[in-house]
Image (cartoon, rainbow, N blue to C red; front, side, top):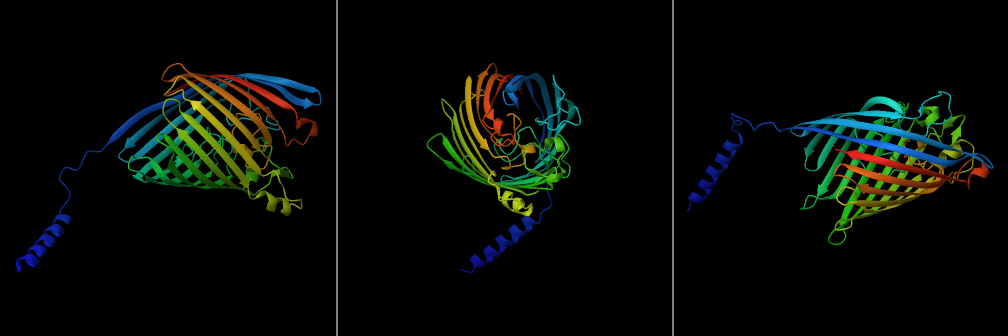
Length: 379
């Protein structure tokens, strides 16, 4: 009858001894990976009816070639990445040096470092990365151009369901000097949380809320201040952008994605008051998109985008450069993609847009048209 407690003591002692055993003589082998990736773009672009004066306009035509090779080396849970961006275009968008605006988020004739990062997968639900890396938060192009790279550090925490799909996510990011042109003094802090929910057999809904704080924006290079309000030539300093996104994705025979994005610059009103002006109302943005099909898993892909972005809804330097303006505009975009091979797709893009917040009243109702034909390659 007394053997039970004695046996239990022996089991506890054995467990403790096992826990204190030295590590195995031959530790597990290191896990290495080596990947070469890349993408390329060939683009023809025609922009028509660019406003000069009432009744006077001009056209701009250009072509562009881009290649972005990259290398990733994995050592256990750490990935080291290095990538380049190579551009050659018909125009030289960075000259003359005294031009008032640069509309592109790239140098048209340039070879530069695009990515240089280290990523540590701490566990199944935590990831840490630093350097110059791809934006880890699924923002829309209204706030962040997908071709720009944050330069700093980011921590991502995730919870997954039994199938490995994300259920909850949180990303904290701090960056500085993330533009291609001079913005070395500008700092960005980003906090973004998301929840993912099932919607039918093949559907998923994503609810995402983000807060982006831009500081020292007066350090932006003059030519990329673009449509943002200024005082004494400097961009207003307070850009505290609250952003909310709802996404619906459905897989299956015909993939479908619906996106609704709304943002508010909470810093616009106090900044205007500090400048002795009336509170500003041009601090909101709306982005709606629908995508049917895919050029990866299907033959065709059709996308439509509508956007209405006030000129101080966000920092114009970091918004998409696909449209003629970064902020202060309203417009539409259609994109038809056709899959040629597993790695190559052809796209035809049409845009119709107007500068609704122009200082020239006559320009506010003037529509500018832009057309593109593209060959996109991804490996």
